[in-house]
Image (cartoon, rainbow, N blue to C red; front, side, top):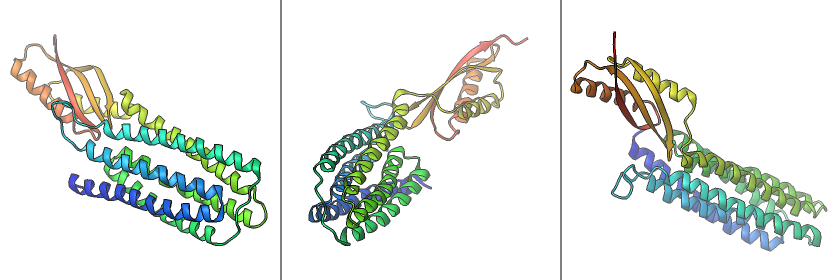
Length: 291
């Protein structure tokens, strides 16, 4: 898939998230307040957080495609994990507020109005969110966008949340009103859990964590295969945003000319940068006494 086509798919997925969540937010707010359901109202604020998160993802995806400039000589690849972290923080705040309001409702014992409309609306929400999740996940897998993958995870959580809310509202209609705030508490806890998972997965991109050992082995294999390489040492790799940068020391015959050694270093750089996920390789040439 070409970069321009990937860009279009990512933009469509993020716009779908923003517009879709805005429509769902409006519908759930109306039904939630009309039927006095704290579970549906809580779910509507989850959609509001999703609107904010989708907007952040949209901005971050666009920023991450910008090339190097005077202020960012290595590009803008950190934009996406920063967005993922902001999404995680928003989810934690929303989840905590939902739990607070739900516990209050649980003790006051306020009942919701009975009706089939909330269940129909929530079933439609579940189907719509499932479609948004599938499209966002497929697009994120193809393009490697971690910000969009965080958004896809959020859509998936909304599918599960909608199922929990349906159960709570249906139980309330059957004469068990306490299930409405209980469902809302489940929603809040799930949102907090998901926010923590998204935040933890994105921190590694900002902290410069090392990639998996299999990728480091692939780097070494490609470097050793270059003619003229006598050995390797101090092979270091770390995330810079969503991409990986590598620093590698290559041993060459000290009797080679500077030009010959330089050519070997360039070929090593080219081979290492062919490994999927590697954005840049820095090669140091070290002279080796060959007997």
